[in-house]
Length: 334
Image 1 (cartoon, one colour):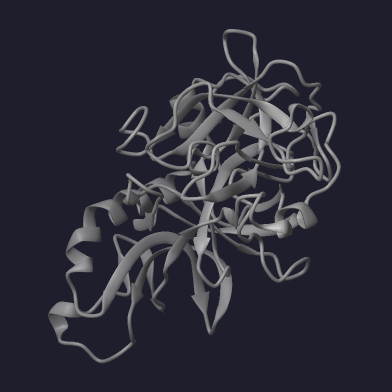
Image 2 (cartoon, helix red, strand yellow):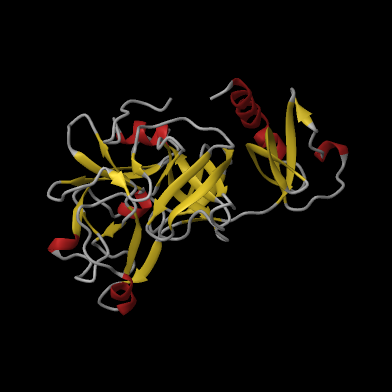
């Protein structure tokens, strides 16, 4: 991470609480500055307001802070988890209608979810990628709210793919829940992570993600980075990392409630390729840069699907003790 970006993030963290107390302000982050409605390549501390208006001097946002420009953005956003929910297969034939053939080998980008129902619903998300740990076993990486869902999860829970042959038949089973982390609730509470791992014991796996290829390891990132992902809902899409470190709250499932994140990655669609980057069902997809390095784990977005949110992959790897991504590149993000 370059020095200017680090300095902008430190200033944002220092000023956030003070500025959120100003009139109309609802959020603060660091990202690319907009001029006349168009995104530039300039790093700014961005202040979101309910409405742009003339305010008393004590509520005004300065044009810059210690040489870092500011950007006042008129926007209110609601964030939601990007899983797909359907009634259980026995009660909703649309589950069968939406299903495909059993996938073999397993690969990143496919649909995955728990066998157990949650409030008489099936929860589906995306198997992001296969990863390695020091024990030498193969694990599938996805989100806590995809594989665990609620506070009733336990290690060993069976996980399944979406199949016409039935969601939890022997052939459709993917693996078992091995580990999980959710900020402030499960795992290492200091990490800003919504992640989980499934142990794969009897299925053949492909280390290549269709449309992306083999992953080359983790990487740090910054606003302006062009990225891609393959999700079970929207497939291969392209985006641009637009912002970092916006504090926001999202509602999780039963027994958990609201969870607040502070260091996530904010992604907008690349209009040259697609109108939106993700939708419900894409939670768990890995976000990669142009070198096929993993930079994030997709887990949420705005309710209008205009913005996608991902965990920083370095924190995901630390929380779940991941050492590599199969195609090479073990160790921490760089």
